[in-house]
Image (tube, rainbow, N blue to C red):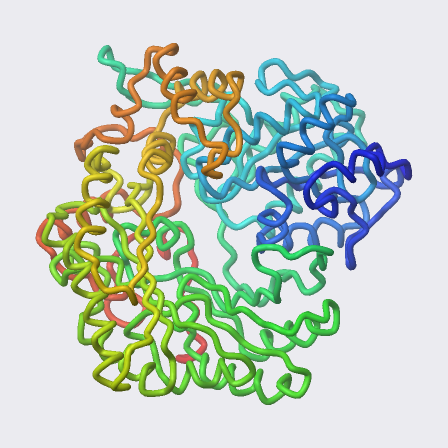
Length: 619
């Protein structure tokens, strides 16, 4: 077992937050790597504070390390100061648990949470001494796997990755580890191609090197063709039918420094069937599957005992929709209040909000409330199928103000399909109405209303996947319009950089040819593109020009329903015909009800993947 730390105290003294790189945190697992068969590096292409906050990696870390034949270690992207020190000193990217080079592992798995992290994957591979292109890696190099939501359009990363995992990985990750263990124990017969063929037989595994993309004469993708029998024409996602039956992260690593989500993360359920037409997660994680309340309470007891955390965050797509939420919170408060443990809900649907619920969760400590109307007018909320009204917001906010809250955060998007300037102005009107409500109810000023506006990015596998994203100039014009309309000092406004949203849109709807652009941009310095201080728009535009590709063709072009989409062979289980019906319904501002509580929308996921909605409140 390696014990020497490649990074000296002198180096650590020169970088920000040296605890990012030291390891030895509470609950981290250290095994003798030579005594196991499979050595796995779990990677997040972002800084420690972000990577350590990812629930999926916490779960996989526990599952893999529960296997006697497998050792999973962690690695995150070093911040630029640390990377410079490492390159100057010739230090290869290393794991936090044993400080050995990542290149010595059998497999390195990246979680792709958003498109702007792609350049960091290349940078981490290079810093590890691993060729970034899959075709240039030899038998001596680790296998590179990627998962997470971006795997559902894997094509822009296809040149760099040996295989992808689609969907929920609790079961398939063990199948992958077992396949690699068998292959190694047999003496690696057939080399990497042989083990990749074995992996390709598993549901949810996509090996891009086993496929060839075909293009029309005009350059548009025409189709994708399997090159060998093991390559399935369509790869369906993995889905966990019963969440109570799989391992949860009950023994997570406790960091030495503050991280983004520095608290217990309790996942109540997966999926959301509200049907917001912009929401990719709502499609990828269908159907709703709730955990039993007893299971959740047992998890919390283990988590409190194992970590010492004093805050529980209920982290599902729409936590207030958990059918047993009120009794769950009552039991959690009753059981853990004396230990000073509080419960928090990250954001609330307006129509699910209950002041009694909010009071319950804030018995131990009180914070602001967050709501997401998403659009400024009812017309546009109907287009996106949000299913809430201004009366819902008025009622929720009024109840909150009457109960003593004064801080409200509101989330919106601009650039949505069919949006007009009247819709943009509606955001300012709605925010002003909330501010005025506070004065009416309390008779005084002092409300703090924060309006956060992101730029809409059309995502694959959604009803809006055919919509051409607003140009940078149009988004910036709408941002200026909105800013000009907000006069009240109690309302603060923030928005996302239109250029980063544009690049996100390019890669979200991109094809395999974007790999050349990504490689060139990274070679010219692109990394940490999700961090405004490091995002360099010109580097990216130069890379597109050098490779002869127009980014607007990917982001801004409306696509025909009949057009082949580069992600059609990667299935979340939802039929394209359902998404097309929803796209048409959006044009007509027609409402599609929640399939969990009302009629089935025949999206295809339950039938196609043989998985059922689990609603504990109706059990």
